[in-house]
Length: 215
Image (cartoon, rainbow, N blue to C red; front, top):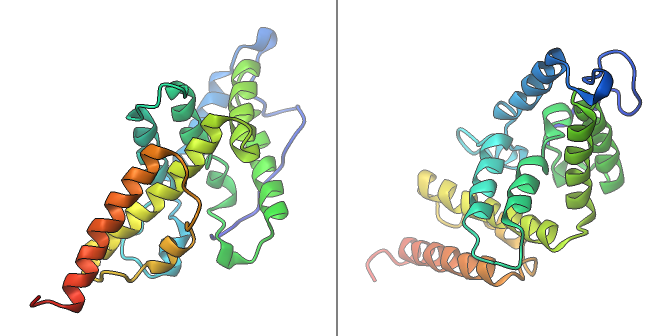
């Protein structure tokens, strides 16, 4: 998905967001919020490449993921942590853009760019917040907890739900099949499997109705 330069990463120095004692400078907070606000204007590249009219933003995607985390009934997961992971997982895209598989950028290079972007972003915050947000991003990237694995599945589930909605809006059932194909075998959590099953059932009914309109 359309990638730009990641900007400077790591290290301290001028422009950081911390004051003595770990407090956050208001200027750093404002800069952070303005950068994160760019996510409202970064279109999800997969939809752009498929010529979807009015494609959603990265912010749109993360908001519904956070809502999906909020309504989970799995008591074995930390709901709060899942919401935080959902809100942070694509944060770097406000700097690097939404990099899609079609961009032919290796996973290693994608990770390098996003890591540098997260360092740049979190430097604008106080030490405690910098550590919290960066570690959330690392947790998701490394898939190191049950919460991170759950949120990764939410990411994929939200994508196919959005694909289903675009097919409905365009009155083109089945047009975005490749997004469904890309998630095959990636769902394991019972709640998500159940939701995916409902999405697929409704979608298949609409495809069948288009193929056999008078049946």
